[in-house]
Length: 104
Image (cartoon, rainbow, N blue to C red; front, side, top):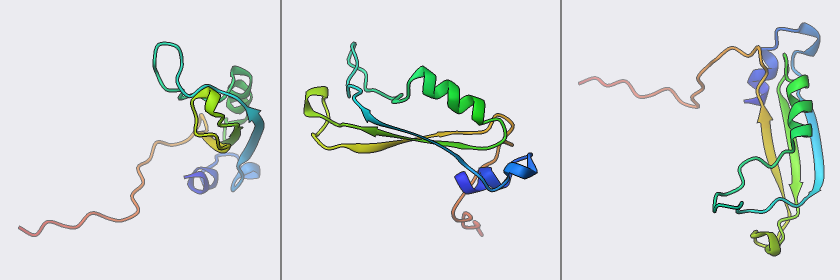
């Protein structure tokens, strides 16, 4: 997906590039108040920075979560990837394989 989005950039100088934003020592709780799982590991500041960069080029945010048991995780740190699609990206559908033709 990142390769496809970067190749489709309308800005020729940025074509075939991906911006990378990283953060470590994140300590997000796994289950938020109200019982819902965390689904947005990025902060508003990181999100805003990524949106600024993602005009013509995709952004990959890699956020290292501590994964502590006290926060509801399994006691192992992990990288949480977040892909920000460029604002001017053309909507497309991708399939690794073409569907079989029905000959009936």
